[in-house]
Amino acid sequence: MADLFADYARALAALRGGRLEKVAAQAAALMRRAPRWEKPRLLAAYAARESGQYEEEIALLAPLRASAVSPALRAEAYSLSAAARSLLGEGVQAVEDYLTAARLEPDSGQQRAELSNAEFAACYVDFPPETFQAIHRRYQASLTNIHPLPQPRYAHARLRVGYLSANFRAHPLAFFFWPLLLHHDRTRVEVYCYAAGTREDAYTRAMRARADVWREAADASDGALARRIREDEIDVLVELDGHTGGNRLPVLAYRPAPVLLAGIGYMGSTGLPFLDGFLTDRACVPDRAVGQAYFAEPLRLLPTCHLCYAPIKELPDPGPLPCLAAGQVTFGCLNNFSKVTDELLEDWADILRRVPGSRLLLKHRVFDSAEGRRRVWGRLRRAGIGSERVRMEGLSEDYLTTYQRIDIALDTYPYTGALTTCEALAMGVPVVTRAGARPGSAFGRSILQAAGFGELVTQTRAAYRERAAALARDRELLSALRVNLRAMLLASPLLDGRRYARELEALYEALVRGNV
Figure 1 (tube, one colour):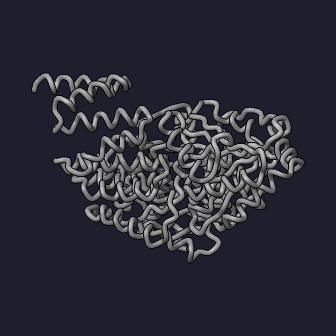
Figure 2 (cartoon, one colour):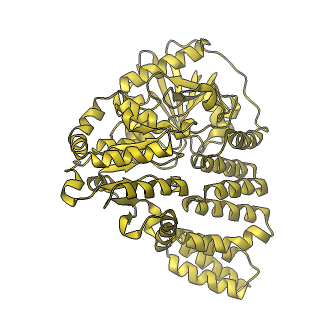
Figure 3 (cartoon, rainbow, N blue to C red):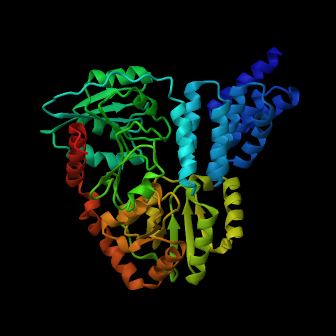
């Protein structure tokens, strides 16, 4: 028995060291020697995940999901399966698995994390409002043991605004938070940042230098962090992460500030009805009643756009329009492939049929593994897309240069792109989007309208297909956009940080005064 434990320890060390082939072999040997011992199987599943063997991971986890002795281990198996299924485009099953993981999980903190995972995964699925509200209620119930702090009101000369995030670093959030941090009117607003992440880089240091007060919060418990925010007498606390990884949403349940808001880094509901609002805009919510049906907290509509983009990463030259040299149009999508549904693949198949000789370029980490590529090939074939029409590429540091080979970007649905849309426009590539009923399905419209390209927004599948095909046939327009789109973007309201900060400050002040 001692040898088994020693071999397991060596396999675990190999996993932590990234020696994945060795881990797989050692875990397989341990499973043969001790077939009823569950930990080697879990270890093998982790190794499969890190190797990009997602179907193998799901298969390894199946027995643990069904009969693991420990509820915590069963919950972990369901959670890992859910993450793999989400990556493979099985959004509905991923949500169900996360909810099962939450039900089985004995630890309250981890249970909340699994419910957050379910909330996030649900954004990628075209669920009705009732499904979202049911998940919100599950998350609300996980916070009932937290008792709110007393609710004071302050009378500061400058409004104290706190921003809470685990992602003050090289992260998509940085591109949308930086203009706000840069353009706040410091005669009216004092900016506090509560950094709940463990990773620091040059972006972190730049943000720290711009904040009036910076608090390191990664090691603080939720209760301790809430008390720190209360001690700082924050008037308005804005939670930036929503249900993304590492979020500190439970801090809000302590009511650490008189006004609590969420938004910017996440496009779905927090599920918390006691918040004073979620930041969005009229383009995302043309019908307030329809949009509100998906949210637990009230929607707060900014007059222009709920996002402001700052191209803080150096942009390569867009280059010439690819189709002029290639003789064929290349459509592309660099969005998280978990957002790509089978229905969307059918739309892309129709677009490719409408544009003879056209190609589709896809780039995402799922294509870094042979299994991931094989799985997606199967989905493409079922949608009617031949392998000769598609190029798959894995992640790379210079991903922006990929747009030099793309003529038209195709947005995802029902969860649209944000940073990917902004970066495509900055690289001279027009983006065709479809806007849905809920804010998470409509922020592509918000971005494109603020950038001055509302004609690229469609409302139906048929219109999405036709708009993309029509644009592909207009080489003169594509050529003009390639040359002028970046300059048009830079001059648009989407990059007007001063305007954006003034609109948010006006909302903050109105909420503090009780005028909305």
